[in-house]
Amino acid sequence: MLTGDRGKYLGIIMGLTFASLIMTQQPAIFLGLMTRTYSFITDVSLPDIWVMDSKVQFVDDIKPLQDTELYRVRGVSGVEWATPMYKGLLRARLANGTFQSCFVVGLDDATLIGGPPIMLEGNIEDLRRSDGVVVDIDGARDKLAKPSRESGGKSVPIKVGDSLEVNDHRAVVVGIAKISRTFQAQPIIYTTYSRAKSYAPRERKLLSFILVKAKPGQDLSVLTRRIRESTGLAAYTRQEFMDLTYDYFMKNTGIPINFGISVLLGFMVGAAIAGQTFYNFTLDNLRQFGVLKAMGTSNRILLQMILLQAILVGSIGYGLGVGSTALFGYFMHDSILAFKFTWQLLIFSGVGIGLICVFAAVISILKVIRLEPAVVFKS
Image (tube, rainbow, N blue to C red; front, side, top):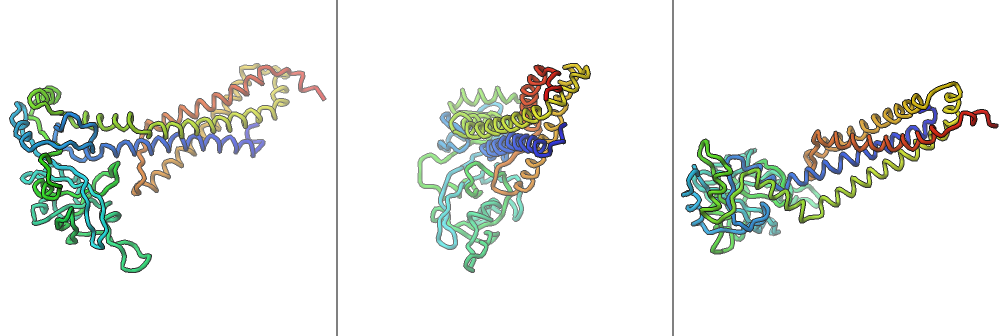
């Protein structure tokens, strides 16, 4: 019965494949996008606690502090060390005269704590060289790349030894780093804290974050509370700061609603296609079901037949949809597109396809249960 009409059979599978693809791909893009909102925090793994202004709402909501706050934090009991970090959006002038906004990150001059996790070229200690900066590889290849000398040619990535201007100050590239892509998508330039302050516009407050390492055996929740009470600043563990950033984008942007609507539409379209096609398929085979009933087949056996058919096409459609999502993620893994395919999405998509199959089976089952065997003998 199931494969007798190839058109309807393939129609059901394609509908379920489309639904599975949408319910897996769109959430994967959503998770990848939300992961980028706090990727800067995950790249800085050494500190236990981030200290900042109490009004900061997420990682890019910079509200600078005075440098004297660093010494107040260092004086809190339980703090092993504390280092300053500058982060600000500054304008860089490229070799061809064009301007590009970049995030400049200033690291502690003595320790360089908070630097990029992976150095592809050069060494992080080269930042101590005169005018030295480290550029992330994505920015070097894209927005900071030098235009081709030939019309229509590919741009030339910026490399070690090249120079640019950051807010009218000379900067020499001494390293290329690999970092996680960020939500803002601007290039990231690393330098020392003192040099970053010279790049930044003159202000009384320039300290963005204070990175804190707790003493061995120190309870982080107790230490963060102690820092808040002693300094009046906000103090978060690494995970708490990630959650703060994540919650801000969930509550204050339309990203969840947009992706939620896409997933819901995929579910509804898949349910409509599969349900209607499966129902029409049952109507086409009513005479066969009637013959089985006339031969003494119970409703229970007929229901099991319909459920088996729904499970079969659901499994095929689910596998094709998830497989297509995996291929999509594989080909897009090194692109600017955000994508994070987790095992939870397999369960989410599987439950969605299961509900569609149950819906399609139920509307067909009702027709079969009400079927009179005598319909077989009507002319």
